[in-house]
Image (cartoon, rainbow, N blue to C red; front, side):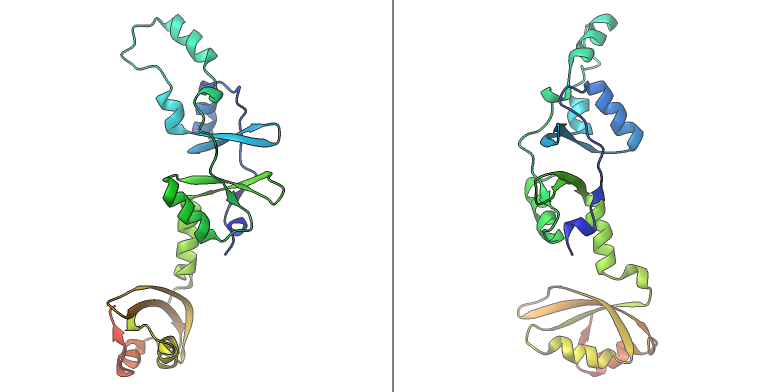
Amino acid sequence: MLVRDWMTQGPVTITPDTPVMDALRIIKDHKFRRLPVMDGDRLIGITTRKDLKDAMPSKATTLSVWELNYLLSKLTVAEVMARPVVTAAENEYLEDAALRMQEHRVGGLPVLNDAGKLTGMITTRDILQAFTSILGMQGGGQRLTLEMNDVPGSLDTATRAILPSNIISVATYPGGPGRLRFVIRVNGEGLNDVRDRVHDAGITVLD
């Protein structure tokens, strides 16, 4: 799966001279958490709701209302945005973008096309949507977690045992030493005794 298949296209953007108050209003109105900052058609920064709120004067300030309004009118996104920007590419694998988000501890990445132009945003929410799709959540049926030896042919053995039920998704994660766990979602015929068939094939059924 590629980033372009899951990103939000045509993201709302702001410019570096956008007042912080205006940027906060945009985030609130659109229920965003972050906004790319553009200079023409060039991505130069990104700002988040937290960045903008942290830039606001403390409630404990002794400044007058007039002084506060003056300061806020002068405070622009350029002074609080993050740069350089960690980005994703349209044509990279979704898991690579997700790993980059994890490594940089960010909840979203601007997405660039091959020409370096901003075309979308990929966020934690998009990653979660892709995750549930990979696991076949919309397909109904039953979920099986199997633990097998991590050797060639293990999945084939499970597939034969699952028949005539239909496998609609498969995901894996490490089990015990030399073992691999398969999360398999099945639907169709034979669901009532699919666990029994898999167990009778000598496969450990965890749930």
